Image (tube, rainbow, N blue to C red; front, side, top):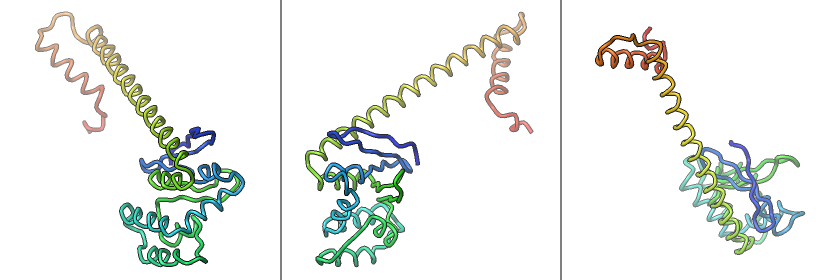
Length: 203
């Protein structure tokens, strides 16, 4: 699990993090847009609907080989009844779901969901909020790509500089003053091999 990041979405701070190269967004933060004091209840209201259970189950079937579809089918049937109730912990524990992550605790707790699921929840909260969330999410991803591109360019530049420094050092301190071009090529080759490859390959 990587470091958490936050974005401002229509006046609401929404936290997210990456897990196994997949983005998870805080449903707890999104729910605060609807009711800042009862976010867990807002999530449970969303989870008790037939369409939500159906969507979550289909997502798990497509993405989770360890999902328990028979438990899901039971929940889906129950969700049509007025007494049906669901919490993130119950869904995760009983179906072995991976699309949602829920932790208890005042600090660091809350419910997160894969971006596919989080966008679905945001649409249920507010179509306007959903569009703002998607826009900010895309902006964050663009910023990340630009940063990675700059880091890659910097590493490539440093590698070129180090290579030139190393080559110059060979020329100044290792190569004798009187050698043929063929001998110079051989010297460069063997010195670079020693420099870049681990010593244990020669053992």
